[in-house]
Image (cartoon, rainbow, N blue to C red; front, side, top):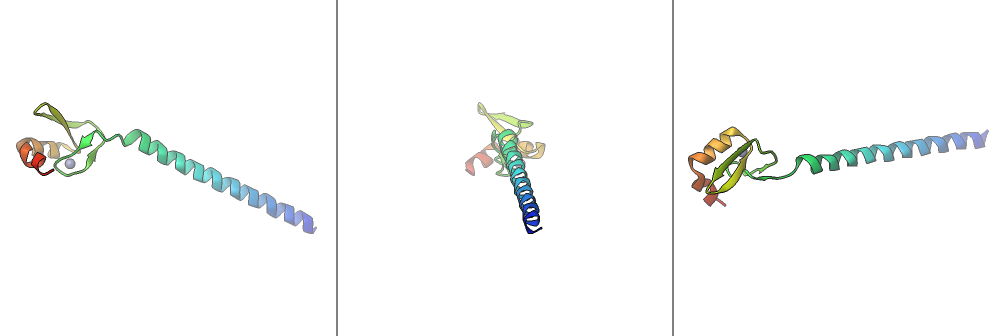
Length: 88
Ligand SMILES: [Zn+2]
């Protein structure tokens, strides 16, 4: 009897470890997937200082392309580009 109970405990333990490993593996995969695909930084939003990862809002100024997180930031920048560029 004692041996069977030990075997059962061992099986449960192995299953738990396998589940934990599988779970951590998934999390790591999701994490790296996110950083690979959606975190390509195109440039810095000079108005609010955040990194811009999509090219929806961009503006050309003195031959350079600037990216913004929102239309508001783009408009704000285009009003006084020098003000925001000299900040850095
Ligand atoms: Zn912004």
